[in-house]
Length: 187
Image (tube, rainbow, N blue to C red; front, side):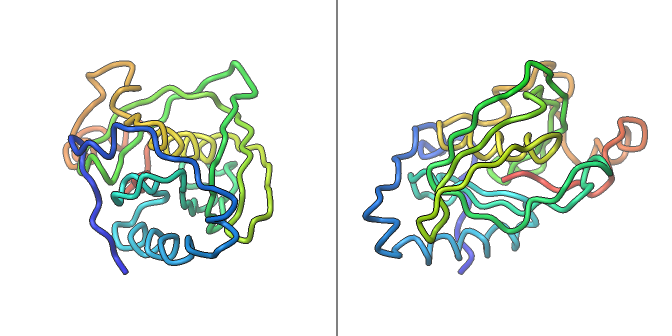
């Protein structure tokens, strides 16, 4: 089922989400919300979505990032659901990325983030996972994890001159700024 996406200004996007309990994971109650989150992400052509974005204040994110979306060297993130993800930067090296968000539709801006992160999470089957992400996939994970702490990417834009409508960006800047036309929005 496709869920309603909360937009910037809704209080659910500004509060820290509650950690999911082991009992909730074991019970299987998360299956439907995760399936609905994937349906919603797909419907809005996103590459990620956090539960607070669909009015559910739980520490859940879903992702699916195609390989080479922004850089041909970037690996894919296959369809993944992360419960209680913990993101830890593992380098001081940063990168600038154009980010958009389903909760801030039709706008993008440049955000500086750590280039490489370690993520620990629990899968819906209760199995613990750890993985390092680098490049744009690392930015996508960080973007979604920010939602769990009540942070929107617009707060991380370093130069507000880069905050703009996607349509105008495509018309005037896309070919010179190195972002593929029709870029995918994060969640």
